[in-house]
Length: 365
Image (cartoon, rainbow, N blue to C red):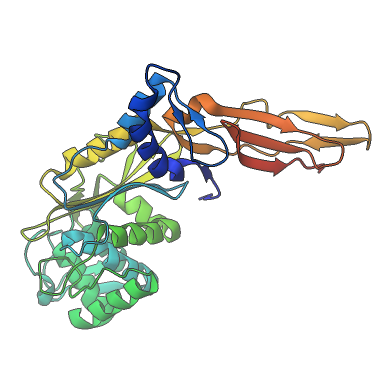
């Protein structure tokens, strides 16, 4: 995934405050004008003011912790207590999956021990059953089988405590500073916790490194080794673009949900933990993202345009298309132009209200 995208959304904090402080002082005399930002003042129309204020009004949540990230731009658009230590419930199984995918031969067949039948959500394993690591991975991630998670932990680590040590080493390797695991399934236990920020890091690792993981968490229904599995993620197939990844519920954790969705070719990740309405709240967060943020492509003529420099006798090639991620209220200021001075290298310049966002040299190759 190409992460070399460009965004101006980092300006939102000072800009939003400036709008609120300056709005009443300017309304009725001239177009609202924001000063004190980079370079120039910002002249906002009334519709832009309204859209800006609406953009910053994210839905109210019962969730104790939440994050919304546009993955391609790397922008965290919304967060609520992202580093709070909370019971992660079956989001734990994402770390179990990371360790298994790192360490295991997925084609290896194992015998299910009686100790794996720990109760709670299950893929329906039987003691003594023979099954591959791959099929256990499906059974853990699709119906959230605690039996599959425990069978994997025993197969890979020898026993649950040793596998938990492997989970914590992996968490440290990934920079997950808010997490500590004591079991592979996420059932409530003292000292077992994580955070929305850490789960976001873990989701990035799994999506970036394991195509099989992406396939499994996007699967709504499948039968493996005689076990019919149905995905517990109710947004799969019911909300446009949702393609994973994991649910979790326990008494201590309440409702947890980590969701991946693709909108107009770009991925967004949403995490909610400690929610009383995880599906409703994730839908509301995704709706807000789709309504108020946009990826903008360069004009269609840019990749096809060819220029001739008569002074050197060379053909100039404009750079390929690069999308720009911005809040919709900034769209009226977006401008493309070609900067071409005899003493300098030609470049494609993208400006937002006079501010240069991209300055890409035009090649002669």
